[in-house]
Length: 257
Image 1: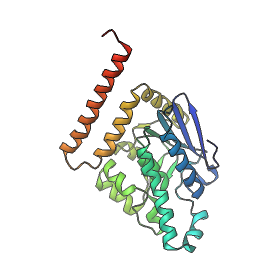
Image 2: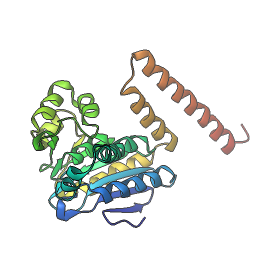
Image 3: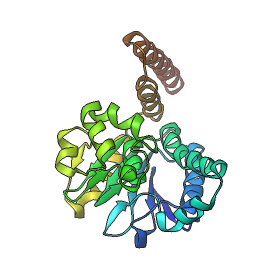
């Protein structure tokens, strides 16, 4: 994978996807949108990669959000139809993060604002450093506070009370708050961030490939389950499928039984 705005490398069965525009604190622009689309398409078809780590290049932060210097003038001159197409394309990235089969671990340092906050929300696990801070910056630049899947993910992840406050105010969630609210799963020193993320990813690669994929599917579906009955139906279907798959695998490896 050869890209201009992102980096991708594979170590063992772990893919490391790095937002690579450090001069802008890895701001999202049109080229990055296109390259992330390609990266997610490739990941969806690559069975050799079992877990993905998403991080940002440079010392300043994870992702500062949409690159307004590059896109603002173009968007203001564009027709409503073109603006809508670009908005829809950018927002689709967060859906794609949920539909690729691999669990995504966000390794977040420094600022994760706007689109960067949404990258963290759309990930399966979030590992942060003491300097990490998140905010839904959209409202601070005159836009609606709910953008790029934030109004879907954040209330489900931390509850509507605090989520609404962050979306309405554009205020920052500190690393301490992220841990207290259950938004992040681990707080680690900056110098240990990638080592710890890789260790977590290695732990996941020791699990069943199909089991990880089915777990992600069940989590996705049950985020919006209308009832406990619906959630149990998804879990029961997956577990029955997994037991049947294990039986087939065992029979193939132990033909004497």
